[in-house]
Structures are given as C-alpha cells and as structure tokens.
Amino acid sequence: MTDYSRYECLKIEVANKLATVTFNRPDAYHALNREFIAELRSIWFDLSEDAAVNAVLVRSTGRFFSVGGDVKAMSNRPGGDFLADGEIADPAKGRRLVLNLLELDKPIVCAIQGDAIGLAATVALLCDITVASETARIGDPHVRIGLVAGDGGAAIWPLLVGISRAKEFLMRGSLINGKEAERIGLVNYAVPTEQVLPKATEIAQELADGATWAIRWTKLSVNRILKQNMHMILDASMSLEHETMHMQDHREATKAFAEKRKPKFTGK
Image (tube, rainbow, N blue to C red; front, side):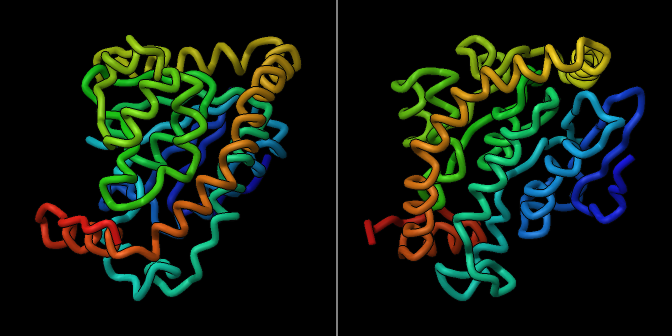
C-alpha cells in the first residue's frame, strides 16, 4: 500500500479496494492554496501506483466542497507573476494537475456535498461520476476576479452542457445549484445533502468491486475525448489566465474581495 502520510491538505483512507480522498482545509473552507494544489497534482499518481486501490471517492466536509482559489492570498501577493509566498506562478503546474487526474485509469466518484467553486468545480467535474447536493452551488467565477477560466473549465464545461450554456456560465461567472446542474447534465445525480455521501460511496464501492480492467479500459477509452479537448484548449486558456494575472482588473478584484466591496473594472 502507498504511504500517504505526507499529505496535509488531503486525507487519504484505503479500505475494501476503495480510496477515499477527503479535502482537509476546513478552517479555510477548503480553499486551494499552493500546498493544496501541489497535493492535487501528485495524488493521482500515488493512487495509480497503489495496488490496493481499484476506485477512488473524492469528498469534502462542512458547508463547502471548496471555495476554490484562495482569493485572500491572491490579494496579498506582490505582483501578477507571484503567488502569495513569492513563488512564480507556473501555468504548466496547473496543466499537470488536470492531465494527471485524467490519466488515472481507476474510476473516480465525486461527492459534492456543498459549494464547489472555480478550480474545485473543475476537479469535481473531471471525475467520472458526480453526486451533488440539490442545494450545493457549482460554478467557475474566474471572470469575477478578473481572470480567464484557464484551469480546465473552458474545456470541460462545453463537453458537459454544450458550448452556448458553457460560454454563458463561464463569461458571467454564474453559479447554479445541484438540482439545475443535474437537469442540464453538469452532474450525474442531485440528491438531498444527507444522501450525497452514501450515494457516492455506494457507486464508488460498486466500481471498486467490479470487473477491474473492463472498467479501467472503458474509462481510458472515453477519456480520450476529454484529453483531446484538454490538449486543444488548456495551453491557450492557461496562458491567457496567466496574462490576466498581470492586469489591473485582477488586482482590483482581489483587493475588492479583501475589502468586501464590489470591484470597479477598467479594462486594464
């Protein structure tokens, strides 16, 4: 069995051929800071190497699945090129997170018990089967903080809900609840909040106990469509997102977030 003790922002438990990956920054509503994103890049590789794992359940705790990027940390960084701790922002790292997730041949079920925002929504939607709370809000509001939806949202949303709907959601930064998300095909199931984890666990365990290689290779076959879309879109969208990190609109949006006011965008 793989040693997962180095993970801090994720909690990993393995039992009955099922790995449960739990987001573990409850005090920050599971916001995705640099350390969290680094762990999300590597966890898929570790799970792929674990012979004790046949399927994966991704879940979270509390009111939020994840509030997405740590906007408060963004407001403290010295310039568009830098993360909060001074590390250069590298679009290639975000690309690897998405592609590492898609390369995992073991089926992934995601339990979305609360709001899933931005990159967290992308991670959830890239899982193979999604079970959401009827009241959980899901969306990719990058534009609301002056950024391009560059970390995979521009690739996965059109495949799930169609180009026209995807453009509206991504350009307006809109959030929709789980019930509506199920209706338009964004998630597989929408159930009452207390039923999310049991339903997702039931499906994940069924997959863990199923015909291992038939399931894995079926996933890999279908995922060729996802990976083709990612290769076509991801480099451009992430590069453009990186460019918007330099812009005054982004700095104004993060400052406005910290000051709890509406941003004043100027197109600069």
